[in-house]
Length: 198
Image 1 (cartoon, helix red, strand yellow):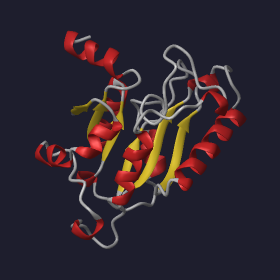
Image 2 (cartoon, rainbow, N blue to C red; image 1 turned 180 degrees about the vertical axis):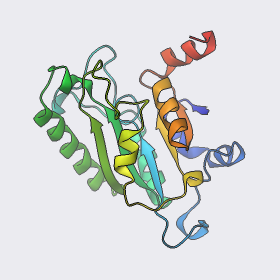
Image 3 (cartoon, rainbow, N blue to C red; image 1 turned 45 degrees about the vertical axis):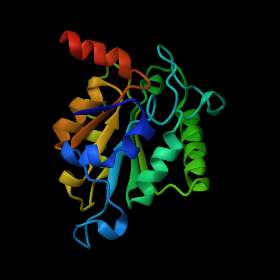
Image 4 (cartoon, helix red, strand yellow; image 1 turned 90 degrees about the horizontal axis):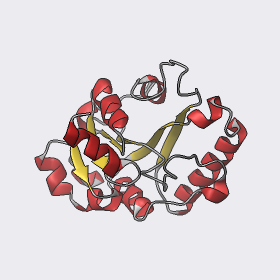
């Protein structure tokens, strides 16, 4: 696991990423990969792409605000030849705090902003189950990763999962890919837990 202050600082420090064997974010013409291999990056949503209202949920598009530098960071990854896959727990649906239809509206609007910024977006995958459902898709389980990559050929050594929670890091490790931890969202609070060993 490697730690970055925020999304944009991650994409500005490609040399450090390579040195730490996280992922070498090379330009498309420098990439060394099979012609049949897809270049993808997995990204958590709340706290990484958008501001996370700690202790609450994004219940409607009008409450959605992109994290500072997030769109620039996603565009940098896109320009390097990667497609973005969003992986996110949304227990508010299963716990009846907001409807699935509103999550879908948020997703559609977010994707439209990606399109306007010429960000190469592949797909988004959400766990709708409540926190106590015991499902196989809520991170740190890897069901969403398996769903996202069904029929997809990609090199696990050439991708990573960017998140702001310990459960994100655990999910990435379980799936067999590198992990990148950002200090936005829950990041600072979760980092303190790591330091304390809790």
